[in-house]
Image (cartoon, rainbow, N blue to C red; front, side):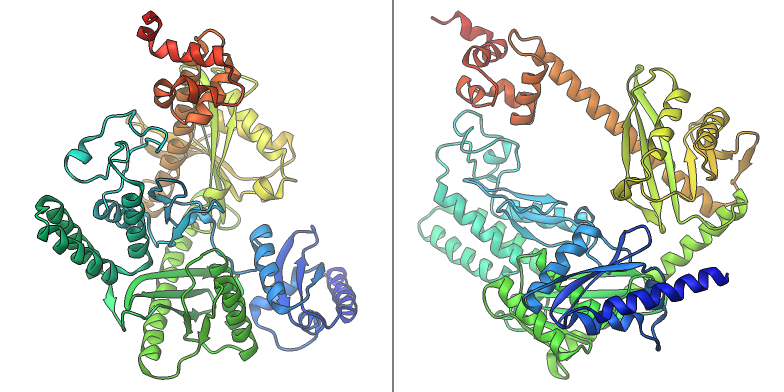
Length: 618
């Protein structure tokens, strides 16, 4: 105990002296633990003053004390100005995902609506935001909302939803039923002009940006013009589109003039949780609400809330002219955020702290949403804690598990044997940490496959990004023999981690846990049953779907490999280029030749394979 205390005091003295040597310049600092892992990234306009505050004696918040107790060293990067420091801080937080920073969740967590780039763009829903020239709208709180909005926009503007590529396939495929119903512009036909399509995409972008009223007025003028020219069918389609647009607008609450475009941010913080709420006002209507919740260990306060907002707009092109903050913040921080957003937007973006009037009323509404988000988070955390305690008592664990790893083995007819690993962490599925293992050493041997996957998983603990953290509990989708094999592997590797098997009954439903010697029933533990059932269903879905994808891809490749001159490599190149076997079948010789690695004889052989009647022609 005394040795540990002495080491801590020595470390603080060393860090204090190192901080005193820092320059009084803008920059970014990276706090590291004893393993060299970056646990916090911060910025300051005066590095020496800011970093020194962490290591001076005085009153500190519990969360800050927890951070400081884990700091063993720090690095720093000097910047030319504060805006550059803020931008670099966001980049480093995204790179290292430090434990104590509040940060944007993984890009896959939230859905976006994207208007793709190209001659004939599409309106799609995606969970990945790339730097590919597409226009992104969102993020949306749920995939359901994003899909409904995308579907409505596609229907209103009669945009295609098929998988054909245009203009490459224009005139080569038949128009589908949607065109016959008047619900698609049909770029597959040469009669669809590029200008007409561009107008439709422009209208879609307006609606997704929140300009519903402006778009509805333009469509109404067009409808009247069509009716005057006796184009009644087209006018009726416009009338239906206006009705759909009106229904979409009814979900939005009018809070100001049509020219009002702004975002409202509010914060609520308690000891165990915090939340930031965003209300987006577009065209004078409140059209979206988004809550971001944080655990108690994330250092959420006014300064870090501004950092989060900067990171949020760093990921989104939709920066409004005004951003309202419901919470007080340092004038310097607000000015810096305003300067940073103006630079990102290319025109002035104002950050305001309203005290009265309509804007203050919007801030109050956002505050109520933030408080409600914290309450929901706490209730959910309480349920998770209760479940974890029940599981701890049932399995006689030394502490409630915060990270559970569950493994499953799957194959098709003894082929494509694959192991799936899913992770439950801090009360929810951690999909970033899911992993697949293609079994290499055995076939038709579940026990051997389980041995291989556990050995491979725990041989990569130095890989901090994916396997750097030990699980508190390991579950195997299998019986006592699986458990015995798993415990043998852990013992051989010198690891002491609780490991149990999930046993199923005759109806393939989970009914008990197995410790290798006896079964442990949890029939009376409803919360534990629901958690384990959810975990088992998820690992089964994850593993089986991976096996099916692998098998399908192999079958598609095999059918191409039967063509003379097409081996495994060329089959893979064709499928990667065209995406589906159907597109390979419908491709012309010229399109096949465009694939890297394809020769004209090989392309002709593929074409004749799927168009045998063409060979009979002179």
